Image 1 (tube, rainbow, N blue to C red):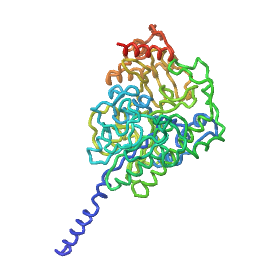
Image 2 (image 1 turned 120 degrees about the vertical axis):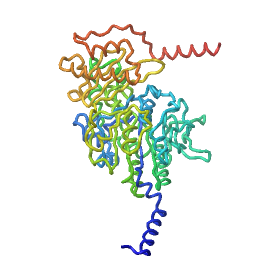
Image 3 (image 1 turned 90 degrees about the horizontal axis):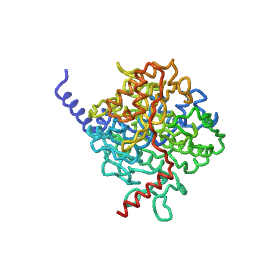
Image 4 (image 1 turned 180 degrees about the horizontal axis):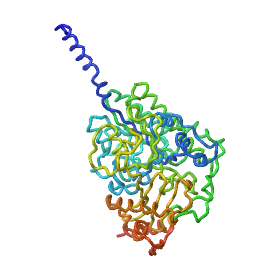
Length: 529
């Protein structure tokens, strides 16, 4: 038995420890969350993704045309990576709206760039802020309308420290000033510029934002924190600071095999944009990615130095992909893999086994319910995505899980774009101006063949179409009301006879120059009135 003196000494020691280290105890009980988010990032540029692909898919620009990404690969090797993670809409603002809210873009209502996020949206950061987390954001936001760059938007959606959040732009140089951050590069009129001339490791945007991430971590190392850094690279313009600007100039970079495909392999939504391919363009893209990976390493080193690495969930992902010459296209906006599929890597040593590879189909809309569940908290109940946490922790899906996710093209003011249902193997795409396309990603990873009318795929088409119809009804996706899509969906789900394309009167097409001329005339007329 303890005597009174020993008992009091024990109690005093316990109290002293508790008083001396309250922040440490609090920090240990709640995992930190750090999200490193890039813009327009082709998944094939990451080593961890290449090693999970067949050679022809891993090296689309040539066997030696690769960029090493050891720090991002470390996260995947010691955590989990998703091989089928899709942008719910593969364009900046809609994808970001789904990611932060867990809701489909039409319900945020950010269906295209430039639409502000609804005030009623509860983000993952707001949920964590209510749980006592220090929260912050640095980099491109793109959810507050047309402001450019528009620093520190008044509506911070739970990111309490948003001093270094800017709404729009792919600025190459940033700096601090007595009146706050600003774009460092300026044109002759003094306006912000994308010029990269003179950029160094302090002012180049990727480095600048990584440094702000490091500062936030150091400032909040003794309390639970949630921080998102949104790097505007490797989105164009494809320019980067030295030495990354010349680092890949000697690579032999070839046009992807799909660059020269025949017109019969091109859906209307996937029309070719490019007549020639420039390897130098990809070399600079590689340079931006190498700079990103080096800065990921810098951030990870700070977590290790302060002994936070074991209690911090680190996410590496992007808003959408970049075609980078595949299918004779650049950029994004289409349901092809290189546009719509994005890297998603999650490191969480307390719950996620090193080397986990998740092959089920997921989307940006699934992020919020999944991460909040992994962290042991409840959501606000407004999300529409799925809780996929068991895929990360149990190497299997919850009972009743369906391997399917949904995507949609951009649209505003009632306009309709493409609509898709995606599984790990199949992708079914409907469009107002095309017959449906079914891709078999296992047999045809280059996405050149339409299997929609093949008898052997009838059952697959029916399954995907029925789930797509259910999604549209449940989540108010008006794309299914388009006459062409509605007719095609009905046949795909229930039709028994041979498919007959619906004849829909098409609106006369005008080129961009004609549309712009009409818009200018309309504005001049309104101004006169």
